Length: 199
Image (cartoon, rainbow, N blue to C red):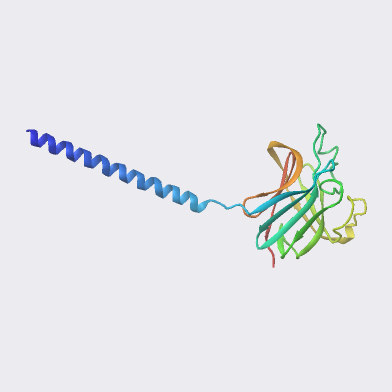
């Protein structure tokens, strides 16, 4: 009788560890599967070039879709103001920042909204609206604000859709999201646009 009880106990212990081992194996497979489908974020650096002015001059550098992209812009603050529709009017060309016009430079052709932008440096303007924004790439990269903006020198215009932000951004900034998305963030709004490889 004692031998039977002893054998039963040993068998129970072996079954327990066998099941536990099987559970660990399943968990590892799930983790590996999750890691395999994770989307890597494009590398990026945000540098403050000039911090002695009210709207610091910043530079975002990133590499995505086979291109090195550099965006230089003035970064204004909310300062308890109403931004959209007031400080930045709807339906009007905006420098997309402060001081000098924002510049957008790409080392290789890229595609935004199904349109191809050749390698080069551009003035980057936008036309904000409540339901959609227009991104403008202008051949004149060196200009102050949008005072001398000439629509006749636009290289490309693309419509994009803004979205509400879950967190308030006190300063206007450009940032990278995922592997091929750049976003403009300010106040409670984000404006994403995808960058694909051009031809």
